[in-house]
Amino acid sequence: MSGWGYFKQVSTAEIERSARKALDAARKKGQVYHPVTIIGNKIARTWWGMSWCENLERYADYANRLPRGRRYVRHGAVVDLALGKGAVHAKVQGSSLYQIDIRFDPLRPEVEKELGEVCAQQIQNVEELVSGKFPENLKERFLARGGLFPSPREIHFKCSCPDWAGMCKHVAAVMYGIGARLDSEPLGFFDLRGIRTEDFVARAVENKVESMLSHAARQSSRIIGDDQLEALFGMDLGNAMEAPGHRKTEVKTPFVEQSETAASKRRGRPPKTAVQAEQPAETKRRGRPPKAAVQAEQPAEPKRRGRPPKNAGIPAGADRAQSLIRQSNYPEKMKENLIQLADSLQGEVFGNSRVCEILKCSAPTATAYRRKLHEELGLIVPAAGQGKGKYRFG
Image (cartoon, rainbow, N blue to C red; front, side, top):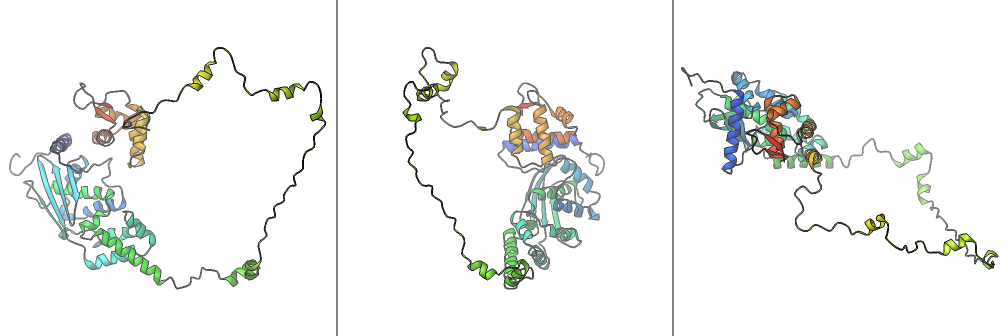
């Protein structure tokens, strides 16, 4: 801090370096952090995550703090974020590690009831809720003013930093981090607004079942009756149902005893073909057996005892890397980039600059991809004796 109330802006490289140190320190202490990792330029990718960020930018009171919050979350400063019942608890790395607590007022009962009715209108809405996704019908309710998103009056936050502003850049970073986290945990939104997810889904299923049962006795106009079928196909269904089916008769061929033919009574030397038919299929060969026969007689590879190798069934090298990447739950574009890195970096010691060169991306994006290969997939390890920040495929 220099002058009166002026803080020097932290550089992007310093934000990323401090965030990595905070994660390493927590790991050494046995603490489990859940950082917010942004890949690419978009903070959120699903319609509900992007809707959260768009709604956040409507708040005029926070306009001057939101850009710095976006900068912090994009460069990994939100090292820990957990969605809870009506609250969010997070840690943001700035000049120090700050604790942020945000509390949300519960959703109004009338809005919650309307939300349940919308979800129960169509069976696919219930199926999406059960599978952990937001129904598409809720999109208008999310984007409408005064809808499902909390207003500024319904948000209460606290940060341990010395900034006296109502919303500091650390709180803004956490608010954007919530939008990114909702991509992977969409039903966490219900927890934030004080709705028990299990009860809400159960009520939606119950309402849909009751609606289906109430219409079960009502005959649909799309069902064709028997009399309409007779007129449509020109046939009497009653006689057709009573007509016996035709059984397929089995024709048995009588056994005819073959008499002895003249050929069987032939005397003298039998023909050459007959002699060959009487000889065994394979004669015993003397001397050294052929090489192919020796190889065929060799026993199969003995069974390996003990615990199988860690990556049994996955090919080595680039094929193994591709197999692990394709088995992951990453988006297809991310899988393609990771496979490109695996093919290009085999057998070489590299750093983030090499990843930037291959993917034609920025340093933060390269860091995120390198972490995927190192910490989540375990494909690369730090290169011993090559200096800090150097890696190779393990």
